[in-house]
Amino acid sequence: MKSIVCLVTTRMAYLTIIWILFSSSVAIAQTAQEKVKVHRDKKYMFLLQYPSSCSVAPATHEHTRFRLICGDDSDQYDFFVNVQYIEALKNVSAKEAIASLTPQDYLNALRETIPDAKLLSSGKSYLSQLEAAYWVVTFTYKTFGVEAPLNSLQIKTFKNGYVYTLGFRSPSARFNDLLPVFQNIAAGFIIKH
Image 1 (cartoon, rainbow, N blue to C red):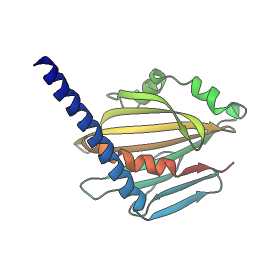
Image 2 (image 1 turned 90 degrees about the vertical axis):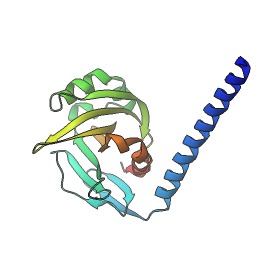
Image 3 (image 1 turned 120 degrees about the horizontal axis):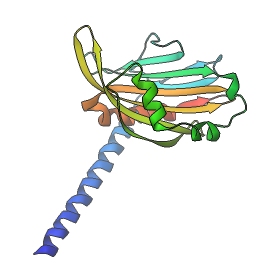
Image 4 (image 1 turned 180 degrees about the vertical axis):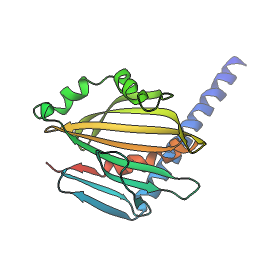
């Protein structure tokens, strides 16, 4: 009897994994089939491909070079590109800069403006073929008496003194469903120097 329970549990786990892989593949394929627009930034030397269904929006931060709002009125999410030049990092490689970043330092800096931010995950990745670090956080967005639980993913890399940060925010309940959209947008980000 015990071996049957183990077999059933193992098969259910495999079916769950297959379903997750299939669901992710479908979402990525749907996003990949959507028409794209291209944003070129000559000053900060990057190119970004994004779904044509998204709208360009005003910047919300002094270093925001490009921002998108996607989705409909009841289910919006946003994406941004921040770029900042720091002379002291001009001769520092992406690998060296990423090695100096810690999840706790990121969280402490974030909590200066968002005190309830909680780190869900972090790690190393790549952005435009450069080593990068990423952080996923959850927090409550508060404005004019409205509170909304949001998740945010930021990925950061460095090149020739420039700090490139891509960010994605969505309602917490939809974050995992929308993650393939962000991954496709991030895959279409190219640093041109």
